[in-house]
Image 1 (cartoon, helix red, strand yellow):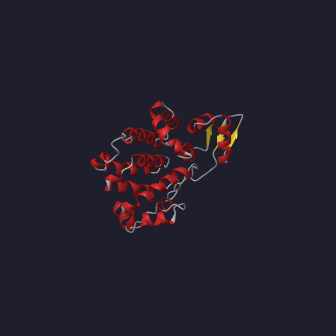
Image 2 (cartoon, rainbow, N blue to C red):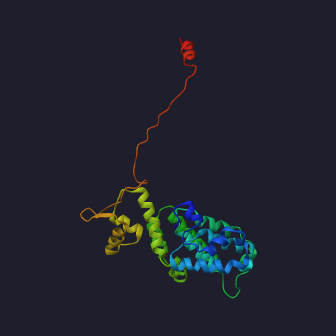
Image 3 (cartoon, rainbow, N blue to C red):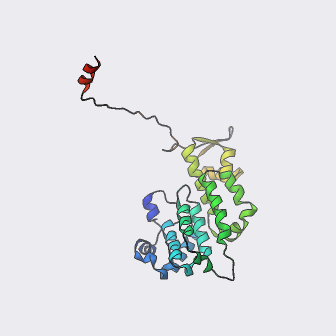
Amino acid sequence: MASSASTWTSPPTRPPLIEELVSGVDRYNPSNVNILEDYLYHQIRSQEYDCLANLAILKLYQFNPELYNPDVVINILIKALTSAPFPDFSLCISLLDERPAALAAAANADEPDPLPQLQPVLARLHALLQQCCFPQFWALYRGDDVEALRDNYTVECVGFEDAVREVAVRAVKAAFTSIGRARLGSYLALDGPELDAYVAKLGWTSDASTGVITVPPNPDNQITSTVVQENIQLPRKSSLISCSS
């Protein structure tokens, strides 16, 4: 996921053709929607992510309701879901909320539009990630209410669960210097050797006797004291002293 404004605006994995489309006026050319949709599915298969290019698809759907593809929209939301705590998901939702009523009618009448059913589910999952309610996220994600999303969409999104774990890791690194093994396992939906392997991959250390995992120091989890020095200028100090005498 993008870690800075520059990588969000222009990911290093973005092909030159997509860069040209996204950065210029051609991003509003409906004849380019297939290129952008193909690029989205490349992101799904390769674990890459390009929010700006995906937002361009949603904007084209707004301007051209006949282009609307619900499967594409759902996949865009899935990719944006794991960008938390960044606001990508909300940016995507804001474009959907503004879509004209004719957009839904443009979908294939022979097949029901899955977006109205799955969008609230995705919104609930997103809220749990934003609130760092990771055990609740996994419980919901693996429950019956999300079966359609798992079986038809996230199963095709390579590395989706690991991307969610990266969201949890970012939160843990920002808030903890150490964390209990059971607690971290509930955040990552991992246990036993899988949890040990994941912790080792992160470069974190685990104390087998206490069950405590040490999170390496970083700018977010280190408490530093701040000294504030005020320099108050009193140009009329002598006048004030004389008035108080």
